[in-house]
Amino acid sequence: LVLSGCTKIVTNSADELTGSKWYSKLENKNEITLEFIDDKARLTLSLSDKKSTTICGLCELSDTALIIHDEDTKIPFAFSYIVHFNRVEIIYYKNTVSLYKS
Image (cartoon, rainbow, N blue to C red; front, side, top):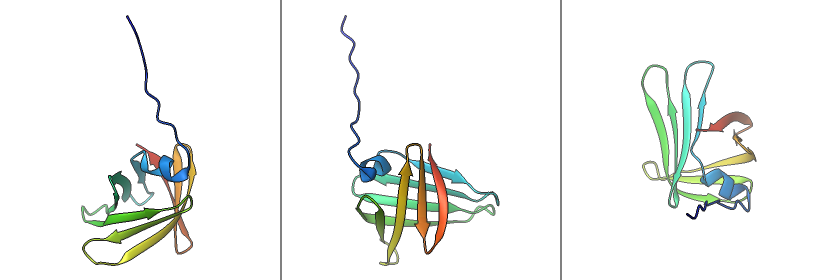
């Protein structure tokens, strides 16, 4: 009997960010999710009144910046981010929200 395991080696913040799905429930009962599929990112804000807004499209990543080129609006949305193991801070125009691995 041979047991083996796989471990993903994380070499930088971009790998850590794209390797997980992220989630946060805000005080006003709104929810934010961030996920990565291949070379695309999807950021969704679900409002407490059951409406939602999604930014989805090709993404560019560095160790501190995330740019999502929204497919619907054709507008690039630029965020800064800081990964703290199981939490990521997303910064947009001096506003910060913390998301957690889900």
